[in-house]
Structures are given as C-alpha cells and as structure tokens.
Image (cartoon, rainbow, N blue to C red):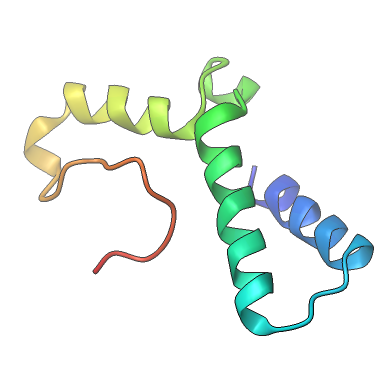
Length: 76
C-alpha cells in the first residue's frame, strides 16, 4: 500500500507544475486525505485506511492513547 501511495505521489509530481511549496503541500495533503478516506483497499478488507484503523481501535481500546481523527497530516 505504501508503494502504491508513493506511486500516486510520483504521478502527481510528473504531471503538475507547482509555483510554490505551499501549493505542493496542499496538493499532497488533499491526495493523502482522499486516499485515506475514500479509496477502499483490498488488503484492508475493502475498507478505507481510516475505517480500518477505527475498526482496529474499537477492538484494542487499551493500545491507543489518542482517538483516531479524520485528518491527514502531522499530530500537533
């Protein structure tokens, strides 16, 4: 899955011209959000990555210190 995601990022970099770093960052964050929330993965039982993590969290409540949120990007 990671290699497929990196391939998607490589496709974006090959097909788009970015005028600034902020434009590139916004595009990558948007694509990561779409990938994590809207693209079911066969390896995850045909659910999106965020759905798979939420399901796993419900089964293993004691392992998580933070709740799973629906945002791409770094923890703050």
